[in-house]
Length: 159
Image 1 (cartoon, rainbow, N blue to C red):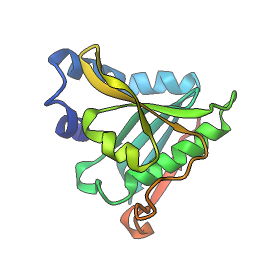
Image 2: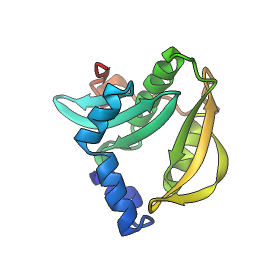
Image 3: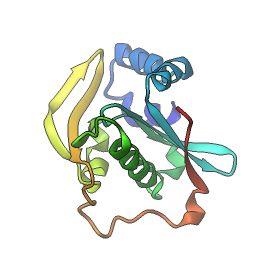
Image 4: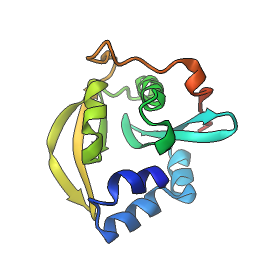
């Protein structure tokens, strides 16, 4: 929640903050996992520093990195794991999609996502629809994951 508040609450209405808080609750995530969502966490020691959720068919429902660990390759590593998970889903999606916070569009573009629609607001949350073909390599060779020392591991939770 700290990374959400730091990144998006300046643009989201009170309704949007309430909607996101509900969507990101442990109960809501657990419910989506029981329906087939895959949740992957990045750990630094025993502390979770990032999370990504992939819902069928290949939609990134959540991606958040603790502010202290942003810009260090954690998000890229989580996304690469998400792309691998999407490629294993049945039916296999042709594209991975995300409803990006407006401030995160540049991050997703570096990973090969393209804007697929105008900025939209739904339930008080502003987002930009984006998509990326499954199996596509990032566009910028200079954008590489951080050295392994920056984050200990990225692990998938059981479905």
